[in-house]
Amino acid sequence: MEAATALRDAGIIASLQLVDERRLLRAATALWEGGFRAVELPYFSIRGNRRLIPTLKEMDLLVGVGFVTRSSQVREPEVIGADFIATAVTAPDVVMACEEADVPCILGGLSPTEIWRAYEMRPDFVKVTDPGSLGGPRYAESLRGSLPMLHLVGGNMPLHGYLSYLEVGVEVLEFGGALLLPQPTSRDEWVDLSLRASELVAAFESWRARRAQDIEVKAKTAQVDDHVQPRRVPGGYSRPS
Image 1 (cartoon, rainbow, N blue to C red):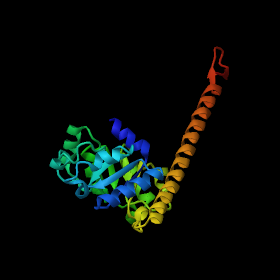
Image 2 (cartoon, helix red, strand yellow; image 1 turned 90 degrees about the vertical axis):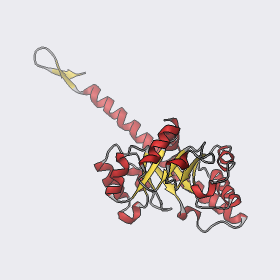
Image 3 (cartoon, one colour; image 1 turned 60 degrees about the vertical axis):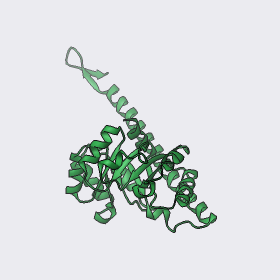
């Protein structure tokens, strides 16, 4: 699914728990200026407002809708057009509705049992809603160890130490309250939000570049090792290939 790939490529999401449309748009603009390319809006903020998602998508943002709990909500006119759907509960009917609408689905959970149940429903991603409360990156690593095919989203990310989650295989990081507090009320505070966003994006992109370089070096080393590996020849001798 192209939208799921786009979300992985974005790598980081800002969860905007704001109701007022004007403040929400200001926050999204500040985040976009800071380099964020994906935001998640709460369902209650877009209900009855058909223009909000199209407006944000005009900014070239991936726009998701969170706090969805019923399949009927996925089909509402205000939600149609969203790039992904997120729910904090294990709701199989929401997964099915997302499949029908061809939109990526993120199911949430916290305990190992909740994560496993969410994984069994075959969503595109499973979000650990608050991994820091159960051990942080080590907990995420243990989940990946038991469910290696799990496409994991880390929720409620801190402003420091979040790169450790990427190291253990978390594919997407979601920032919420830690990024948005204190709530911007003046122009300077919107600028501060944009600066915090740019610092996060720069660190993330730097990590991603180093990761790609490490993978490239390992691949080249493996090719060299394979090339010089001795091979048997007639007569019982061996020589580099």
